[in-house]
Length: 463
Image (cartoon, rainbow, N blue to C red; front, top):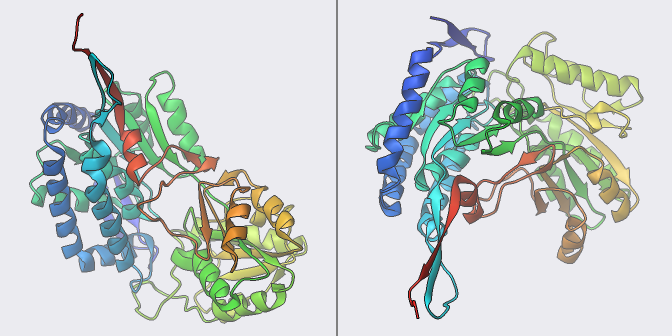
């Protein structure tokens, strides 16, 4: 039986070791899901919601344990790790609160002699493939709505964060969820591909890289099933001439460097009205220099390691290439003692003198580096923000709400923010355009992707 190890970025030790599921275990899980969903689909939505609510209660009760595991699995500073538990609770409880209304039968305008309505039926078995960077926040977007809609769920989590899958199973078991309705599998990429190709899987919810999303599409080709793909981002911020400077600095820096920049919707490029450019850069540099890079299990640490050394080295190369091409680095890495090549510990960096010929302004960095460019006006900012193969989120900092909407109408993005960034409101649809993916999670619209409409057309008067 083959196994895998989770190497913690904290100190490079083995934190978790688990066996991969065998072919027989995979087949059994898929069959159990099919058997369980026949009863689950006939369970009232209010009862499904009660199961999910109890599971979230159990999840929140384990906040300290879950936070520690997050820190050791993927490196988030322990001071920030509990925020993921809070985010899961917020999203799950919102989706629970709107489930009955969102999934209710839709009555059609009366027509003499006919009764007409549309039911929202579950798609069947939902296969969730989740990443390590926000292991609970990305997965809860699909898991809770899928269960509420009457589907069975099989979760495949990243080998970097396997305990997250196990914690889900634990809290659903404590909630009394019927056996087989939720299951997890620790499996290889090849096994993942074969599950997607299985006739027993009816929907795939994938969060990860663009190449990963492409692989999911290829695996599902010819099966005619729906896919939810949340992929990469190179999210921009525009600090307009009328922005509140202090707020813009604090918010964009946090958006760029929280989770060591390892966020698909984090800020990776900033455009600033030329009137504010110099003071904005000065403010960003001052704030970034105050970060404490260190072991994430130290409560004083505000910037933890990247998930692995290779990820940090990628950002180092991208930054070095930009500097070689003329960019200016404002942060001296030597001022951060933990920064060492060949390790996941990487100092934050602020770059100016950048342009879109540099990869750091066009390719996903997924690390603690941000490039800042001055712009002359809204038109230039709009052009540069749209000059990307990604379109997950974008934001503007301004005191003019009308201008924010006018600019937002011209930006190719799934979510448009004013005076904030790097946040998911569960009442709003979470979606992307271009290479940031397809499909939608959260809000009442998220249920539409996990169900199929079934129309009823009843002729009640024959004459």
